[in-house]
Image (tube, rainbow, N blue to C red; front, side, top):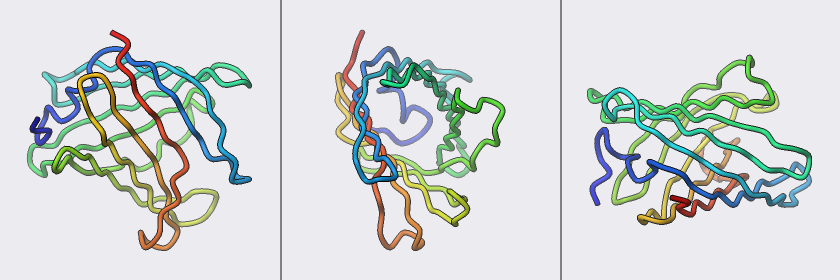
Length: 155
């Protein structure tokens, strides 16, 4: 399926069960379950993904807001976290889908250190998808994957 253009994220419309793996600062991986619901906005050139995270420490939420720019052919993705809903919004990751894989990048600061962020969407089928986040502190020479989400269609 062609994922270029404003319908690149159409695969994600609807409800999902999500298995999360998040790398802790100690290097250990924390795993938990969650849900995700995505709906289109602006005639499909924007969307919002509402996430619930069922962690051992309690339930939290996050929202991904995405827009497509027809001039650049790129998507921009912003993140809002319920743990700090009025906090500064990080620079959006920007990118596109090529050959069925979405790659999105941003430069920012994480824990006081200049950091490049990468999101990858892959293994996309009608009933599943994979998202991962990685950080690089050496301008993209090496990457440390720190969050993986495995999506399974709920409805």
